[in-house]
Length: 246
Image 1 (cartoon, rainbow, N blue to C red):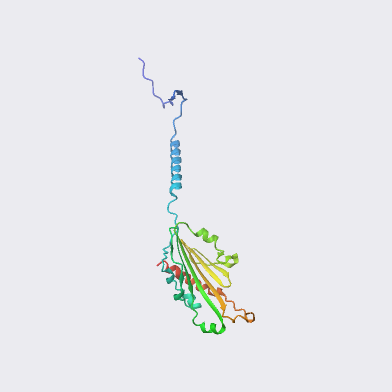
Image 2: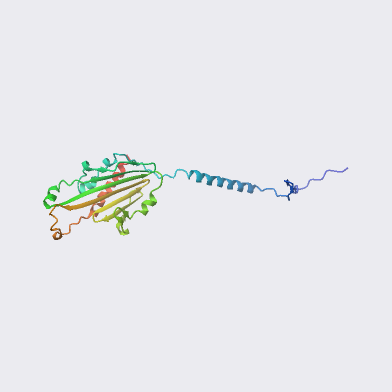
């Protein structure tokens, strides 16, 4: 009798030939499990890259930090500290730009004169008039993080590009803050806080009544030093930031 072959050890790999389209191919090795895993990872990466290209990396909008501006936001700017240091705000002459509402950016601008009633008679007698104005701008970004642009433009003002020595860092105010000396008659405080970029600028204009400037060269230099009001500007900026989060 012919007995069945004895089974010992493992089966040897069985060599097979594939016939595809009439071509006799050489035997192929069985695919290893790690090759299937690698193929799956590559496929997943391709799908992830396609999704990023099509839909972006999720919600990358900057943090609004609770800020909100409306058409009435300029009226909420109280300027308590500057009012005590210089003069109260003149609510009758506040000028605002109106609210710019856009999917990428909301913005409002305020121009607030300070009323110098106490010095009115003195100024009239001397023929020398000094007017202080506070300019406030608030921009809330909805699409892009304004941080990089805020840093890049820290030396750029409405008066041109100032030197680095004119820019001082203000600690403990928003994410970043700079006090920028724009000249002898203007100082600006600029703050970045999440999606919000806020500026508070103090400017002064001195002019003379007709005929009063004839002897101006004989007068002592009485140029105003706006740096003495920087602490008041910082206090009022904190107040503005707080009021816009209510």
